[in-house]
Image 1 (tube, rainbow, N blue to C red):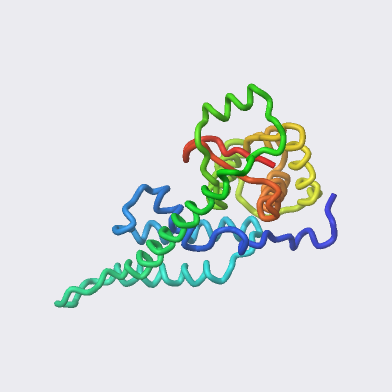
Image 2 (cartoon, rainbow, N blue to C red):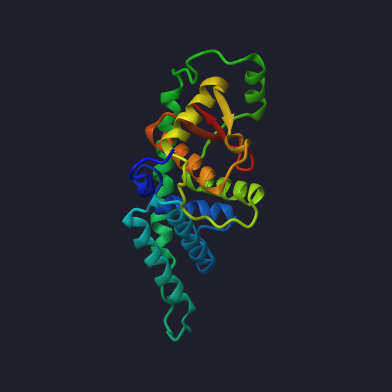
Length: 238
């Protein structure tokens, strides 16, 4: 049931990753060298992600727009004919340097996180034996970021509702109702896979409400998302 103000519902992106994480996601997705970024392609894809986030009513922090302007500027500089006799610095260095620094900080943060988990139980209660075996077979897990979730959601929509255009519609589906639904599913199953949230079918508006509810739960720290490897199914844990 729609609640007052639901049409203005937004997921505040500040709690997720910033523009450097989106750039890093695109570099990995396209399997390109960080020192030889195809700037035109990456810029176009970056802007597509901003369009998708806007369509989903996800609040976009100003940093994303600043980065978009920087990418467009670099793209335009690289499209201009080279009339300089002296060799100039590659304009892509403007984003390569902060990306390398960001990667270094992520590596340090990852090491600290691993140390913190050494003496911490991941699960608060025992898992069923068959699920334990399944998780062991899947191997080590990787945290899933916002942009991987957007990719997974886009793929799911293309499969279940081919031809649909992402537009924010609430209709009668409340994000709060879907938040309760996801928590209830995880309470019963403890672990669930991303696509299972949408197995019962529904409208595009319902799927979007479910997706936004998931982002809200991740933001609140009530749900974590993982993958065994970049091509594996996304796993949800309460």
